[in-house]
Amino acid sequence: MRTHAVLLAAALAASVGVLTGAAQAPAYSPPRTPDGHPDLQGIWQVLNTAAWDLEDHGATLGVPAGRGVVEGGTIPYQPAALARKQENARNRATLDPERRCGLPGVPRITYMPYPFRIVQQRDKISFLYEYLGVVRFAYMNGNPHPRGPIEWFMGDSRASWDGNTLVVDVVHFTDQTWLDRAGNFHSEALHVVERYTRTGPDHMLYQATIEDPKVFTRPWTISMPLYRRQERDAELLEYECLSYLLEDTWDRPEAFPFK
Amino acid sequence: MSHRLLMWLAAAAAVLGLTMATLEPLAAQARWDPKTPKLPMARTWVAYKAKLPPYTPPRTPDGVPDLQGTWGGPGGAGGDDIEEHEYVDVTTPPQETFVSDPPDGLIPYTAYGLAQRNAHRAGLSRGWPGESPDRLYADPNTYCMVSIGPRGGIGEIIQQPGVVIMVTARTHRVIPTDGRSHLSDRAKFWRGIPRGRWDGNTLVVDVRGLNGKHWFDSVGNFHTENTRMIERLTLVDANTIDYALTVEDPTVYSRPWTMNYPVRRAGTGGTDNATGKYNWRAAPVVDNDPYAREVWENNCTEGISVNVRNMHSLGFKWFRGVTPPRQ
Image (cartoon, rainbow over all chains, first blue to last red; front, side, top):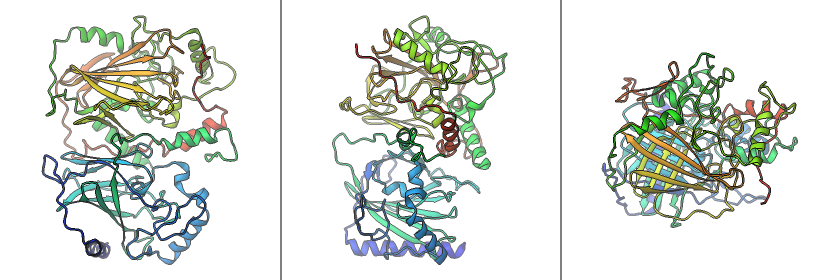
């Protein structure tokens, strides 16, 4: 466990170094909330293909090609886990939990093609997702993660500030969610550290370091920009996935997924 | 699973109080005693609030009434049956109607609307007298669908300039108060599209674009995709929101009608189900558990595959909404 914590810290430090080095962006001084923290509030969304595959991929029917978001390019699977990932990929049409409209987990929900809203209060950051109307509270009230074992689809999120970066530490997951539609997966031992850093008036850098000693050989990091929705009347609408799925398949036994 | 369930129950009970818990499917498994007194709703509330002294709510920095905090639901048996009824069975205790207008407490259905409601009720297959032999629809709440009104709850209200945000463990509503327009009638949603404005001390929310696929309660009272709803939220004392929901739809109702009930600040009491009276506390109860004020994951859809499978295999149809004949 301690080894993994050290590795995680190293991976985080490396990713920050790589990104600041690559972007050459001058430090942006974000606006502040009344209690003095960077103001991350608003409606954000990714503009990439990570929802389909976190790694580099070509196009197939309905899948846009894309450059991967994994730093270093490849997810460091243990051998048995890589075999399972490939099995998942082959059977994704039936195995992907998204097909049954479950809560998609973290970080997957961040890079699905739906907007989300960040709301800041003194003692917590709330992430309100259009997808399934999911609510995720990242508490910053001094409480540590509650004692487990707990298995939550969206995990337990605890937030803190590292300079201008919001750091969200997430544990207590299930093994019932995937990381994308390409079969990338994790176990209930997943530990995610998210970093949200404003890089401009309408942009934010999102990084997530993913640690799971049952599945990966070391922690690894994804990074991508988040974009502020620019429409004057931008708002979260509704994606009640399960209701659409049930309505669509209720009278079609061959397609009904809850047999 | 059982651990998670316990955690969630503990969190729900601690944070939201029992009134909120009645909205949730887990607590809806509560078994009601036949001796339960008639639980108060619109009639008791209308009489109670008529005697309240005038109240001036606090204001947010941008000058509108401050409704912020965590709020419960309607109390009692929630939305089991929003019309007045006596004890039905262990799931449905006696309760006053939610309907404050018309004064008789009945939903003013047209003949067509009433026939639809009665068909829904007769097809529930709950072992009640007068049922039809065939199963028709299961209550949409069986599948964790989101709604507003008696079954929606409010949760925590967070106000920012131009917006009122309501957050429960299950979901969120973001109500713009910046004067933006509605979407076109083509766009339909389970909870419609809300547009808020401040009228004196009252938050008025105009809801359009409803998909008409939800029920107000578990016994088939319904609206359609032609329905417009107006919610009115007014602080009448430091810990009570007077919640009124007006429903307009000439295709199934003969006139607009209104539900009205109090919503209490979390931890300040509610309806005492043993006496059938309000049992309100002046100040929130302080729980020393450091996690007591946290809201933890309520993954309603997680265990839903069992409900879905059961209802599907029993032959219940999927409720696609009522389409009234063109007039």
